[in-house]
Length: 259
Image (tube, rainbow, N blue to C red; front, side, top):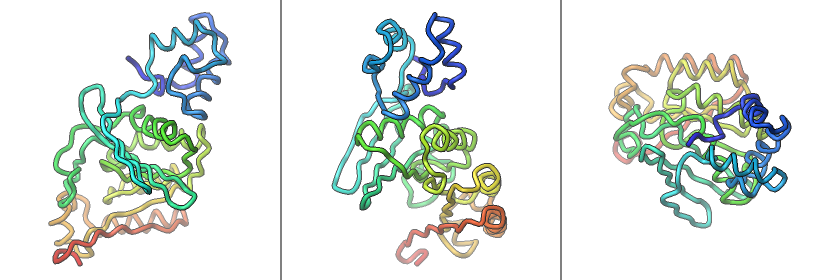
């Protein structure tokens, strides 16, 4: 069943008009899903019963199922199963008065970083619906607004650039999340870094360095032989020149390897 998350407002209006409903119903549906994180069409109380029935019979909202979750005082980890029986995860982080959602962008990861379980295999990119669905689901689950998001879960965001950038558009335009509270973490994809600077100059960037010299970095990040550190650093300098933003550098210490 098609997820309604993948239908833009104009297309939704056309569908509703074709079925004899008013155009403004589209905005009501969008508000129920994005603003109130309601995951059941029948709970959308200001919609006619016939429309709620039509939506429920023809569309889903969240295009995956929750199969595992683990919770402690600071985090909630969700594991989801897709319609093609693949799994991916996202994590809600509670820190002082802020709630941050760590999003996945791919199922598995093609980068192949050593010491990272995600890098053991790559299956496919997550769709737009599957990425934004993580946010809607998490917001519904915690029953609080989530105003900070990081693309720092499974996958390399810039290798799923089209869907990730579309989700960022939705965060900013539909959910009124400040772009300064959105962070994209990358292992170093120069094209993606430059494209982010041009398309979303206020969104934050984090770079996973792993090792300061080329040879050691290539041993830890197999794809590093394609994206040389010299080229990555050049793209990072261009990003700073375009945006004026600082870049966060992430470095995981591995005893006896890169410490």
